[in-house]
Length: 146
Image (cartoon, rainbow, N blue to C red; front, side, top):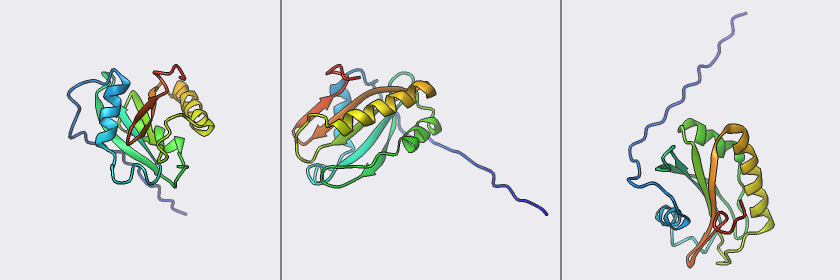
C-alpha cells in the first residue's frame, strides 16, 4: 500500500517594516490605534498581536480574535505559531474593552500569565499587554503586572 505524505510549506514576506523601534507603551498604543477600527472599538472586543523583530521593529500584526461585548477567545497556540512563522522574537498583545474601563479583569491577568509561561519555553518575549479603548490605554508593563 502506497502512502502519500503532504509537504508542509511555510512562507512569510515582510513588505513593510516600521522605521522606529517600540520602546514605550505609548509608542505601542500608537501602533495599536492604527490597526483598530475606531467605529467598532466600543462595540465588541477584539484581540490583536503586534509582532516584533529583535530590534523591536514592528514586523506586522495579526488579528487573533473577535468576540462579543465583554469576551474574546484567545488561542495561544495560534498566537505563538504566527510568532514562529514570522521569525518574531517578541510581541505585544492588545485587546479592547468596549465598556471603556481600562482595568484588567481576572481573565485578562490569567491569559497574560499563560502567554508569559509559554513564551519562556519558546524563548519569545511578551513585551507588554495593552488594554485599549477610545479614550486611552492600560499597560501591564507600566503597572508592573508582568
